[in-house]
Length: 347
Image 1 (cartoon, rainbow, N blue to C red):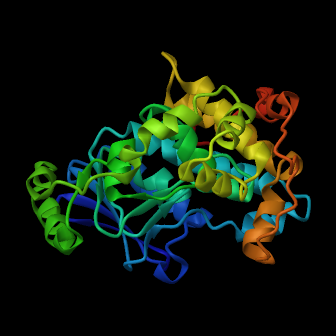
Image 2: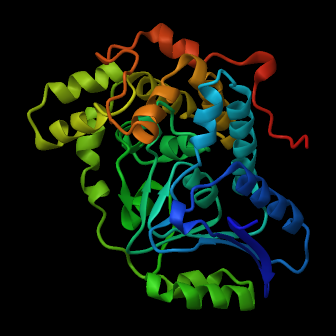
């Protein structure tokens, strides 16, 4: 297929996204092709590691290709979206648990579905142009593709902040927040990839790494913790509204662009995940409860309409006053019983 290049080069399984004109947004077929490659290489003695990268300098992967989700959902066909998400989440779990090193090179935009394929591997490389984010609340979804796990594991209350504001992380911020591991000057990436192919040895990454710049996100951590320490969206909004700080004003402005229902559920998911039972499986299960219902009961279709279809940037959100009833959050996150996510491949 023309959207992705899958091959073996030297000791490495190579997966390159080749849709730079679409910021390497991931289609359903690309998702399945990546999974096929991971399955094929798991027990291949000729493959020591997997390298994920992408063509173009603007994006590793800007997210999932959501045009088809909108086209089917607006016709009342929710099954396509549910299957898309279930299959994508299965791939996210597979990358997370993979027994061979998975090295991803995350230039430019790495957002949403791009985080799902690029940030669950064992070695995540960023550089000068990297911008990583979980912007799902802006289209009426919760941070998914296993992103809620990473938000729950982020320092302090940084996860709540990133999940509800869609704030973009530079490479150094992503390392601080746990979305990346290694900072390497992008000029050196081709040579590093060639060395990985030749040797199959990830120790090369440490040799090539440089100290990242100071993280602006880390510098804001104390303020983030003070405002995002509440149990609910209402608690957080009250804290922000009570402050006259520039940070609080900027944060409120960002949150006003997002679906209140999605933000309330994002906070609830992160809080439920924290603790001894935290796992990728639990995170994906919680996310799928929301995405399964997102078209029929959530703000997803309206969010896509406003951002992608009509581009009027004026979504008509449920609970536009930001007063989200606890019952509404509970409804979106109820267990799905026989529709619950399964991570076994059936086709």
